[in-house]
Amino acid sequence: MTVKILSDSACDLPDEILKEYNIDILPILVIKDDEEYLDKVTLDPKKMYDDMRNGLVYKTSQIPPYMFEEKFEEIAKSGESTIYICFSSGLSGTYNTSLIVRDSIREKYPNLDLDIVDSRSASVGFGLLVYKAAKMAKEGKSKEEILRMLDFYVAHIEHIFTVDNLEYLFRGGRVSRAQAFVGGLLNIKPILDIPEDGTLRPIEKVRGRNKVLNRMLEIMQERGGNADLKNQTIGINHGDDLEGALKLKEMIEERYGCTDFVINIIGCAIGAHSGPGTLSVFFLNEKPSQEF
Image 1 (cartoon, rainbow, N blue to C red):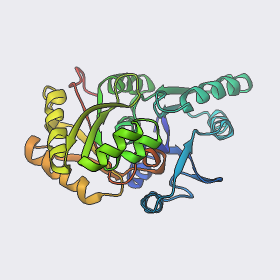
Image 2: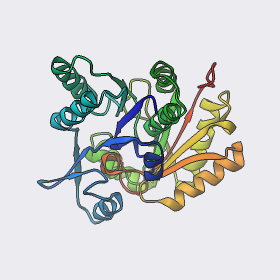
Image 3: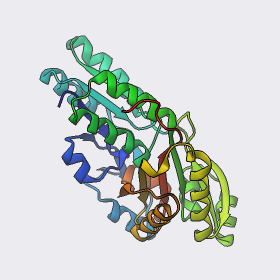
Image 4: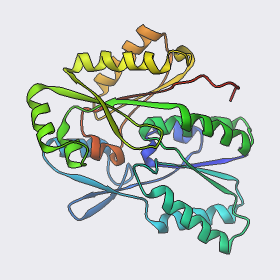
């Protein structure tokens, strides 16, 4: 492998992909009361979702500088050419912290070969960037080729998702208390996306689970209709709702003929804010003009 791929736990890729492509992962901190956990290391997402259903509240904190210092110094000593693909700067301070630490490490190790890419993405939308980069690295592609691909994917990856309970978005400051209360009474399910600046944005409100899934598929067509959906890798993830994720996959297969999927549970870093029952789909809105 010519290039090492490093990422963080908000990419939500399945363990088998991380192992197959030797992707290094830095865990985001998850906090319950005064106790800190490492996402997917000392806290399992299923445990967190069960706790949340029972009324417990989890919060998150960005990767601390010392973790970056240890990892970046390890990269410097090994001499590996590395790309760190980072959780969206619009949702976390992790990206800016990583830049500061890299500059500090370079004072001691001027030959540190480390590029840092702001994914402006989250969860498996972010994970698809990491997955594609790791596949290209395994194929022996150069760092420059991988970075060109990442530029394209960052600009064109779509995130379409819905949450099952507006309470969790209220806790995160995304909706008001009144919206959360009325939404719960009326069975309103918001559809959200992540625009180009990497933040979170509500785009529609739909009443009922089946209607919201159908509307998500319509948005796929509206945004990805010219992007050869059939031949893409489609990302799907879920907040401890595998049945819902598989239903969404089946609907996409039937409507668009897609055959290649990455499906995984949403990890603690994202799930602490989106809550149980979240469903998401990720795809490109434009076909690359060159083969990556």
